[in-house]
Amino acid sequence: MDERIIINVKTINEKDYLEQLDNGFIDLAICTTRSNQTKILVNGKLWREELCICASDKHPLTIKDEVFLAELSAYEAVFPEEGGYIREKAEALFAKHHLPLAVTLEAGTIFSVKNIVFSGNYWSVVHKRVLDESHLKITKVPDIKLDIKFNWYCLNSRVQERTIEQTINHINNWIICNEVTQLNEHSPSFIMKTKKASNFLNIFSLSIKTRNLQHVLEAFDDITFLLDYLEALLRS
Image (cartoon, rainbow, N blue to C red; front, side):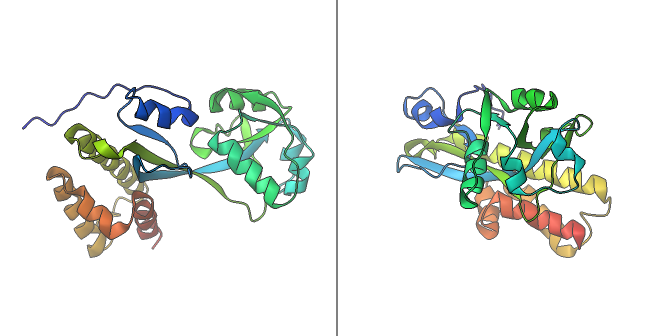
């Protein structure tokens, strides 16, 4: 049976995912994990990415090996518009420490943020994955770790539709296989490192072929925990 599906990708504002799903403009949304979930939606965890506080190597913040939040607060920052996940994380962090966050400039996308930070006048928070360390420097803040989490969302009434199920399975498959490939590149013997890992990957492959991925996920709680498990195996 041919299980290929065609996915039309549409870029939307992350704040509009509920309206887009509810009106049938999109079938499935992949976006940052949101806390304001309604009963009409169902969701699943996908992956997590590390975030970095960064500035240009021309910025005073990059002179020191470490800086404190109070020092960051004294400098101007650039962030995406209000309501975005990364800005919300930064605002919550500074509010927790009773410090002001001096956002003096807003940019439409994270790539626009990077370009503005590179000018040397601002600092910001960006995904480590897209950080070009030849142009931007990570600013280390003691005891501060930031990350960004991604979920899939769809209408509760549509979650069992075959194409949506297949799409979710393919996405989960791609995430885990990509992670395993990267880990294996760092350690060619990774997959055979433990019998437990080898058995797990065999079960996972079979589950993908039979579309029983849920059986694996139930044992691992969610994709994020599963990826943490794979990384722990590499370090062991």
